[in-house]
Image (cartoon, rainbow, N blue to C red; front, side, top):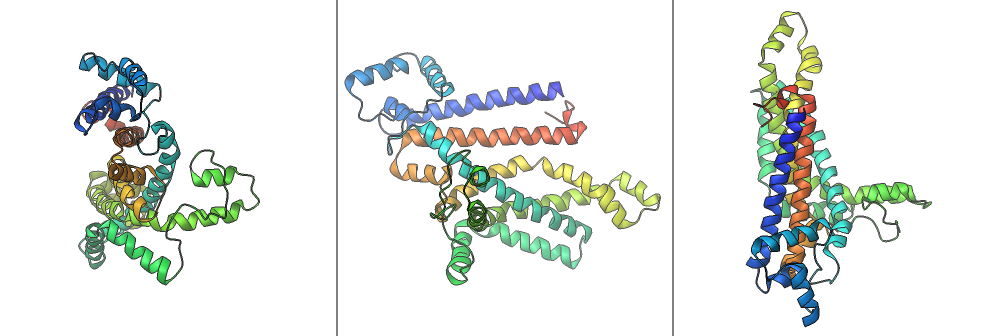
Length: 342
């Protein structure tokens, strides 16, 4: 396990260097002055600009400039937003929890529904239920998320009036910002209306999380189906049949557990896809997350925010991917081996 951890640590360091190098190079590729793109201070006086140039080693070699940029990142200095004139780090800390909350709920929905359906398709292999599930999953994966989001608002918000169409919680509830995760902040608050607020926040997240979960859900269906078919075709399942175990005993005692291990290794990759979908969904449902903020920054040509937001979001996705690898390695000892864990 130590060798596996060191390999993942080296991978994280290498990926972080690549991400920061890409973010740093964007300041030279964007229109305008590179120093302004890095710091976001468009109205700096000549004295302030000279000080910033010295801090960022702007007149030195490119390697020294990159090292100065890294130093500011490690100090939590991502620059100042050109549009809002607020520190990028504070904006990220305020907005990222909303994206995490939406993505985690969507991931839970995708796994809780997609994996059992995939197992059901595998159990009924090449039968009508299997073919129907594959058809529906392919259809769900093909639907554009922006169209699905607007359709959901039209049906469930406008016509039926079951669910709210925008925001994280109604304005009538004043919940103090503690962690940034709405449900945690509600539970930690001392408001006498906390349970009404919790119910209201749940209603607000159901529709956007479900829309985000559709595409990953279809992928989990196919992954779970493939994994279950591989397990059912393995030698130890044949041995279990020879011992006299019934089909459903084999499914519950052996097949499901081992199939889940193979599905978990793909969770990190699907989470990256899910966060990308959440960025579009946040715009449709006016969800105050970092994805919506990034898209607005692109329209506003806020280059400092684009650099900092992409770096923060990419780092978060990669950390989730690394954690998923550790969970998979803990469940499957073969993954810690040099041949399997590379």
